[in-house]
Amino acid sequence: MTTVQITLPDQLAQEAQRAGLLSPANLERWLRDQLKTQRVDEFFAAMDRMAEVNDPAVMSPDEVAQEIAAMRAERRARNAN
Image: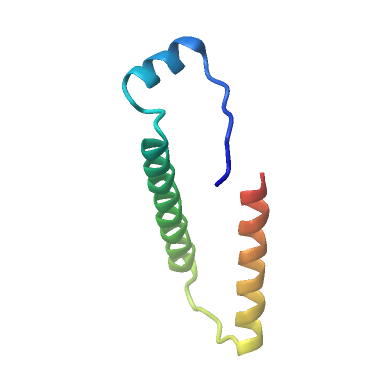
């Protein structure tokens, strides 16, 4: 388990605590939902990029592997920020 510390304005933290939003179960559910939403958004963004290509070029397996590696590196770099 990892402990995460966040800084919130006092009033917001108090309201969130009273509403039960800061419980570990609620925070976990919210984070999982956000991650799922982000993956879906990334999927549809990729679909949009694919739709913009008029005539997709035939790619060799090596070219496909390079594109996948580049996409994964881009995602890792984005998630590191």
